[in-house]
Length: 300
Image 1 (tube, helix red, strand yellow):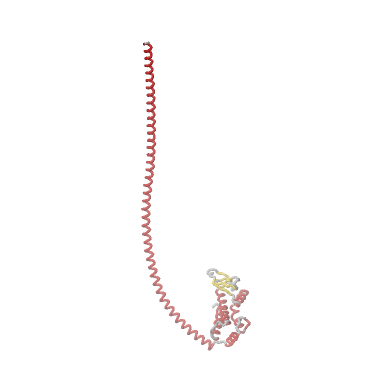
Image 2 (image 1 turned 120 degrees about the vertical axis):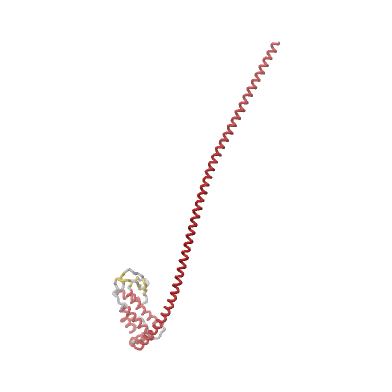
């Protein structure tokens, strides 16, 4: 009985020891897990801090680079501003000098212009006075010439022929003795050129009042005159009809055609009753136009 109790006691004691060992083992295992977990969290936090530190360092480097670039940009801007300021001052100085020179030049030109105007005004006054005196002399000469012509130089035959023509005026060649004489003595000789065919066309165009002449300004270029047939200076051209071609003319040929045209123009005006002067003055004008045709034919 006692042995059984003792054995039970021993078994209970062993059981207690086993339980104690079991508890100690369990506690030991739990402590290791807790320590390992804390170490892991510590390592993780340290790694995060290192990463954060590295990122901050990189940000600082980036900021430093930006600061350096900003300083460089500021320095460049300062230099550009200084250069621009210097250039502006230089340009302004140059503009001021140019303005002063232009003003002085303009003032000098104005002064010269005023002097020229004054001189021209005086000269113009003198010329007007001279022209007035010459007109008086010319009128006096014309009066003397007209009186002399009236008294001593009138061709009575031609005068009567002109008077008869005025009774029934016509520019046809065979319409009157007056026109027949003018054609034979003045018009045909004045319009007789080496180019006979073109000469006849010119006369026909004058009779129909269909002639146009103008200057063509061909100075320096020697060309052949269409009527004279010679190489010369041709500064004029004539057209015989609106749609016809232009013909080059020398000054001599042009003057001869112009003299005949002037005669026909006056005769047409007389024919239409547009000449409001007395019969003697009309006759004197005819004589003057005949003289112009003669002079033109001679190249005078």
